[in-house]
Image (tube, rainbow, N blue to C red):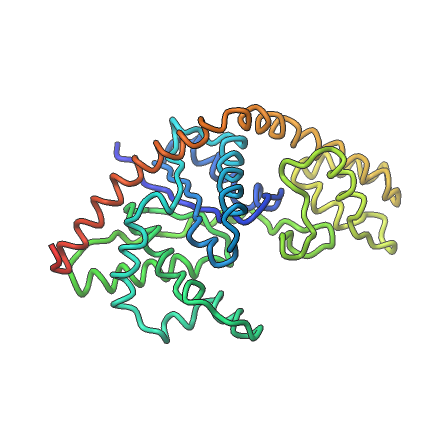
Length: 316
């Protein structure tokens, strides 16, 4: 039976945190394990160029994200893991899409509107990123893209672009669907806001024990309650509600004790990932070999789709 295609990408913009894992990366592992999809997992380094202007930092981040993918359990024999910049069809198709896309349409994008509202100078890359993202998705006849509720617009842009191209030049691109995991809650940071690198409120996914202790002990608590909600909401990621009920009843008002229990549970979860990453890190050539093999596999499919698009617009 022909498998449907699932595609997702992460920007190499720094260390992942447990919010990244439970909000997205865990779903990658689940999809690979179930085996219902042909899975493509991409390091979207060209998107990251909107934020990173240091070549050494970019190279390091790319390598580290590849390590992260492998350390959490993505298997290059079961999934295709590759770097966006290794498949030139992404940028070539983006230009084709640019020629059928209007500026007012792109001005609706959340990233552009947010940057404009903050009075920032908006680069062409930031303004135009929905078209590169549409290319990322449409080149692979993608059926589903795992996204959070706040990212649905990305898929809407890809669908709109596919529909417009198909209308102008004939049926070429499949219309992707968002795959939204309803049971994935927004992971809170140590300050109670959404966990985010920009808020500096994260617990790193591969944190050393000392980092975990520091982060957990800094979790903001409300002294008016027997149960510290911020601690509890993070704890729910690692234990069931029934397990937590007993723990929190036995330790009512004992914030330090509850944080210490949380430290143990987080470290128990992270330790094997941390160790796996250390082992993988020792063979740098193997990591780049995996990316090269992934790029060749992804490139074959992307080039074939681009060829169809170029024939349909009349340049071949």
